[in-house]
Every structure is written in structure tokens, then in C-alpha cells.
Amino acid sequence: MLTRAPVWFLLAPSVAQTCRYAVLVVVVALSPCSSGSIEAEPLGEAKRPFQIGERLTYEVSWLNLPAVIAVMEVARVNGPKNQAAAKLVGTAQSTPIITKFFPVDNRVESELDLDTLTPEHMTFRRREGKKKEDIEYVFHQKEGLVTAVRGGTTESLPIPAGTQDIISCLYYTRTRLPPNPGASLKMNVYHDKKNRPVEVRVEAIETIEGAWGKAETVRVLVIMPFHGLFMNQGNIRVWVTNDERKTPVRMKAKVVLGSIVADLVDGVAGIGSAEQKS
Image (cartoon, rainbow, N blue to C red; front, side):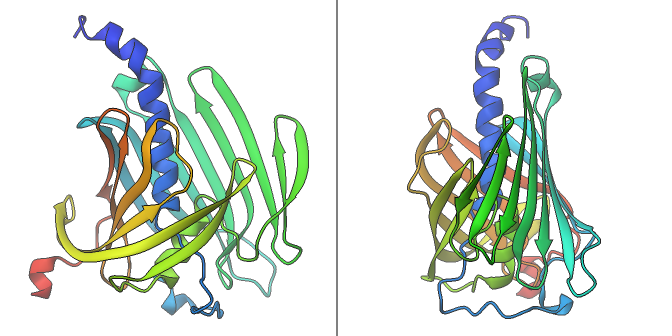
């Protein structure tokens, strides 16, 4: 163990930041905004695949080594009387072996309009090594603007209609994306002071196995025209259960050395097995 410590001292920042990118992209990767053929009509609670109280935990690994534990939750929030709203919470914490050299403790919160499935307010509390940063976005969807507060600077930038943030997009897609192989949709996610276009293609229906047992899933290819941190290429694959919950169970992306994988390890209750369906 002592002989490997110097290597970890050099690699820990890259691994931790790579896994942070993976955690963020796992919620972006599934997230095509409406392409015009899908109407954004208001949804009742019964039509949403996610509910208040949902909590999903993922283990993010690099070269089969657990590096980050990520959790995504749907919490209740008090909105205007005529508006249904929820708070989406995503956290990412480094595992003990990474924490020794490069601690990561990040938190993203997004207030979501449950009728339109668009974000209204997002905060990103970033803690990585000695770096500390707080970012805030306020979305003015009707005006087509977002106000960004970062590093003591405030600025307003234009956004397309229906723009999502890095966590709200997952829940939008779980509700709107049809699980049909060959389907292709485009989206816009606002992140890091930029509008980021992403194309998502449904590749196939595939049975995979994990902590949830065996499950029939929809395999999705995410085509990103920009390279992420330490990414060798922009393409990412995500597997979502092919059922009414549309639970994301796995994400895989190539990096310069090997791959990063996020697997669902808790919150699997209710995921039907492929064997039960057969």
C-alpha cells in the first residue's frame, strides 16, 4: 500500500475530477429536451416516473476502483399555491482512499417546476481538494434568460426555451423520452456559463445485471460536441430501466486511461427483473 501511495498522490486530483464530471454527466447524459414532436403538456403526479422521496445512490468507479459515491434525491419544496414544485438534490463524495489525497464533497440543488419540468433555481456547492466554489443560476424561462452568480460576478445570458440544468434534465427525460430504438432527440443544457447542445440516440433494448439483479434496460448513446474534463471522446452510454420508473442504473464513459462507470447500488426497490417479465 505504501508503494502505491505516491502514485495516488499524483493521480487523485485527476481521478476525483474525472469522477465529478461523470457524476454530473450521468444526469446530463439521459436528457434530450423536446424536439417539437413531443408536446410539453402539464403532467399529473401519476404520469411522472419519479416521485417525492425518491433516493438513488451510485458508486462511481475508475479502473474498477470505487472513487465517488453519488446520491440523487427528490425532495418536497414549497412553491406558489398554483404551482407544483420539487427540489432535486445531487451529492458526490469521494471514497476514503481518494479523500486521503484529494477530498471531494459536492452538492447540487435544483428547484423544478413539476408542471413544465423546467428548472427555476440551481445552486452548485463545489468542494474539491483546496478549491471551494459556490455557483448559482436563476432561470427566467419566459424571458429566455438565466442569471449566473459565480466568483462574486453576476451576469445574465440568453437561453433557448425549455433549457435544463445539469440535474433537472434527467428527470425531464425520464418523463418525456420514448424508449424506441432508433429515436434521436436534441437538448440544451445550461452549465458553466454556456449553452451546451447534446444529441441523444436510443440504441437498443438490453438486459444487464447489477445490484438490482437482472433488468431490461434502454441503452442510450449520448453524443456531446464538446469534450469533458479528461474525456477521450464525447460519447457516453447510459442504461435506463424499460419500465414505468425509467430508473438510470448505469453510465459508462471513456477517459484518457480506461473508463469511468456509475452503477446504481441503492434505491433499487421496485425495479422489475428481466426474469420476472419473461
